[in-house]
Amino acid sequence: MELPSLPDIQSAHRRISPYIHRTPVLTSHLLDSIAGCKLYFKCENFQKVGAFKFRGATNAVLSLTDEQKKAGVVTHSSGNHAAALALAAGMNGIRAFIVMPENAPSVKKDAVAGYGALITFCKPTLQAREETCRKIMETEGATLVHPYDNFNVICGQGTASLELLEEINDPDVVIAPVGGGGLLSGTSTCVKGINSKTVVIGAEPLNANDAWKSFTTGTLTPSVNPLTIADGLLTSLSELTFSIIRKNADDIFTVSEESIAGAMKLVWERMKIIIEPSSATVFAAVMENRQFFRGKRVGLIISGGNVDLKKLPF
Image (cartoon, rainbow, N blue to C red; front, side):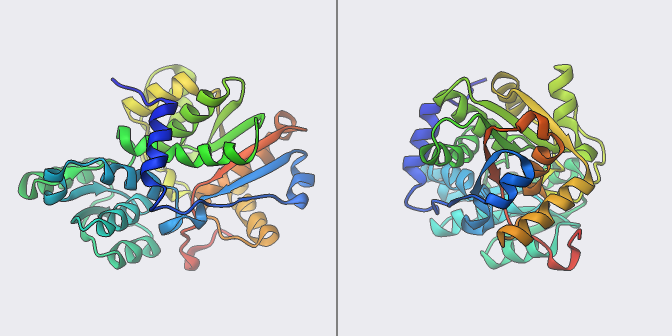
C-alpha cells in the first residue's frame, strides 16, 4: 500500500493551483481569549463548493488518463465530495455520476444538481452506496473517485495545510476534522513532512467515534449507525486512511454534540463566517481541552460551510 508523502502533496498543489481558491487564514482576538491560545483558522468554507473537498476532487480528475476522462467519473457521497467532483469534472468537460443517500442535506443535493452531475439516490447505507457505484462503473465504464480512500484525493486534501504552514511558521498544533480520514491523512502527512515536532490531532464527534476507537485500539473499527449533527463525519476510516493516520497523527479528540453546536454558534456570532457542524469539531476540541491547548499556537482546518439553514443546531 503506497502512502502519500510531502512531495506528493506539493506536486498536487502545483497541479490544482490554477483551479482552486487559496483560502484565507483568519484570526480572532476574542476567541483567542476565550480559548486561552492563539488560533489560526484555515477557512476552507471559502473554497469552491464551500468545502476542502474541491482540492482532492480536482487533483483526482486532473490525474486521470485521457481514456478515463472520456468515460467519466463516479462517486458516492453525502454531499461535499459529490459537489466537488461534479464541479471539478464539469470544469474539465468530464461526466460525473454521483450516488447520494436519500437523507443527504437538501443544500448539498441542490448543489450537486446545480453543477450538472447525474445523480442516483440510494438507501443511506455504505453497502447501498457501494453497490450502486459498482453498477454505474459496469454500465458506463466510469472511474471511481472515492471520497477519501484514494491516493490522489488525499494528496489534494493535504494542500490546505500546506498553504496554512506557508502563512504561519511552525504552529505547535494543527487540528483537522476526521470522518473517513482523507483530510486528516493529507493534513498529517503534510504537517509531519514539514516539521515532525508539530502535533497533529483529529477532531471527531463522540457520537461517531470510530476513528478514535480505531486509533486507540490499533484495530480498524467501523462505526455502526452513527447519529451526529456533523453530517460530513458519518463515514468510517478505510485501510488506507487508517494506515496514514496511525503513522502521522498524534491523537484524536472526541467532542459532544453540545460542544459542536456551541462552537459553531460562537464562530458564526463572533467571526461572522458560516461554518458547518463538521468544521466546528476542531474549535469544539480546543474548547473541551483548554488545558492541553493553553498558550499554544494552533492551526485549525475549517473544512466547509455548507449548512441547511432550516436545520441549524442552535
